Image 1: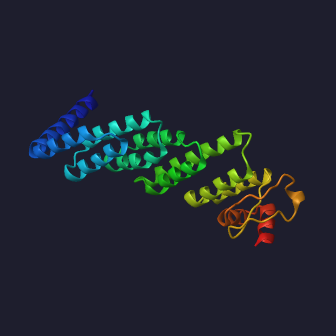
Image 2: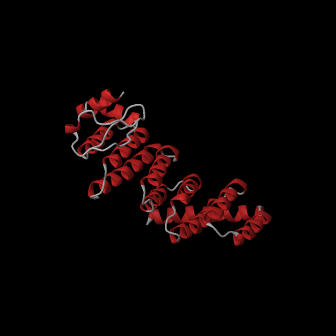
Image 3: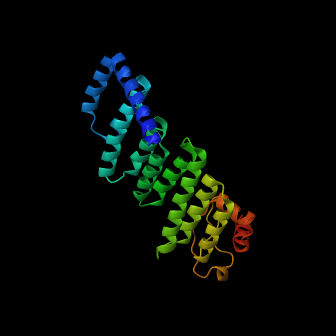
Length: 238
């Protein structure tokens, strides 16, 4: 009960502050309301929320605009091209991490290909305000992608090697990257050094192999982690 009273007092204080701000900036609010009626797209609403925070510093008004942007984004199928802008605005203006997580998860489900997922997760890992939680969230996204690769019958060595590269780059996790390269090796992948394609020097080591591009960085991860077969391939291909 005491908590309810405390919450009620906090709400009343926020309401009082909001009303005072609106009275002091009546003309600006009228202008923003006219602009609000004219916006049509997700990005337009986000840009208006940015302007509200710059000119009025009103999180309540910005939240209303971002709520509308999120609803429209969801209705359009969680377009990955709009996700980062929306997530950035929510993180910067509202500081609501649970909402950021929800938006990232929704954006992840909208990534049918690896390229948009890679872009989203790198953004999460390096751009969000809470670095510790951001890295943990990025890790979960890559873990989910790995699970999808393991469950998909058509997954190739190249799919695992691409994931290994970004895991090392974005998370700095060389052990995980090496395990992913080992999975690529099981599927007949060919490692390269210096970002070049090479042929397998020992075809019997990879009976189902075919040329697959793997980054120099990922190959070096395998070397440092003691993946002997991959080390041998890189050594002969350098």
